[in-house]
Length: 188
Length: 165
Ligand SMILES: [Zn+2]
Image (tube, rainbow over all chains, first blue to last red; front, side, top):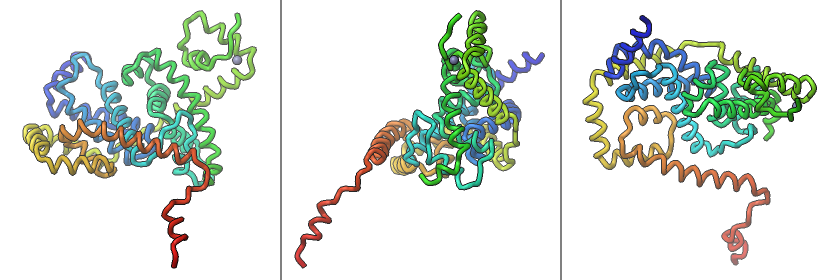
């Protein structure tokens, strides 16, 4: 029954029917918004990116495959929107992404406080990472997708996800330690 | 069975994503190797932090949701109109040029309006432009980080001091 309903939903989506898409939006908006917040650490930005994600999704409905899974499809669009934004931001801020986690300019944004809370440190550490690594870490560990599912969202193999996750953990660990010792970086 | 320290293997071990025959090898190594035990503890802590980071869901702000609902409704009702307005804006050279300028300047607030109705012509040109800008800025940024010597004295300044009063 549920399968039949999903198939009917996909059919309506492919015809760009408004109610079908409204259902998708209402079902997934919180999930996608929180995913984008976990990546960006910025509520307002996450709200804007969520808006963009669903509008992009709406525009690409006619290209939706009949056997598509809605959630991974939305995650994929959201991930792309996030990556696009970082590319643009890099131009504005003149901030090149480094291979290593050290990025004092980013951490300085959260600096000035006495101590950073655990979540603030997680946020800062993720923000200092290249998006291909932060998305992998967040999808796999925070969103709880399997390596196969994460691979489908990122457009890489499950094996590539495992390799990338291992590197992402090493990067995150170093970045998190820097964030934890937060105030020291203020003088830079 | 012997095994060298291997952080990738530890990561897979933790995720339950090793080939069956390798679990024992990793477990044996970890028991014998203090650095890998410490690494594994750190990896588990990262898992805990990330699970915690993913555990809290907050609702999307209501005004943001209303904005999206309204835009979806508009696009559903006026798909032709939208396509038409896109075609015309692409035809008008000045509008395209203005948008191109906006994209290059990359003003964050404008990001929304650009992505809402991108004229095809502008869209195809921006990535190249951004790449060039990026490369240029990256180079400059790297140079400014590498050069620690005092700034050079410009000829203009020298000429100035040697000018007779
Ligand atoms: Zn070892």
